[in-house]
Length: 115
Figure 1 (tube, one colour):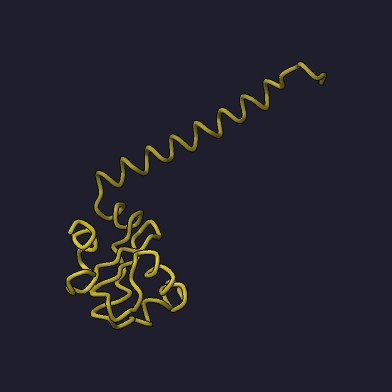
Figure 2: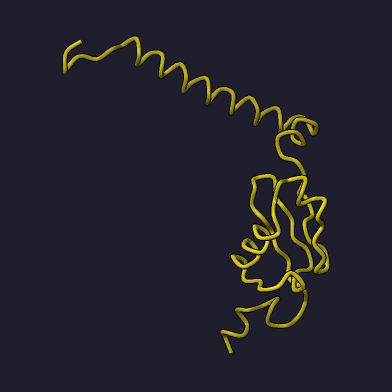
């Protein structure tokens, strides 16, 4: 095989792999749309990690998340202390959703900036 030649067999095999991945993705999306059970398997419901400032250690352990990892994620959401969290969920895509306690500037930090 020279410098300028194309290996058509490798190119065909690569195309088959890419087409297979796209096909599986489309099939799983379609099944998830049609079936609640498949949707639940592919996208499990959010897992509660913190409620009213209390860390649910069992759920952290279940997902192999340390308290340090949790605190880091909370800081990324602008929350300094766990006690300031009303609810914190681990979403099916691996991200965390944080709902702060209703304490004025914690709930609406942009309002403070406007005034």
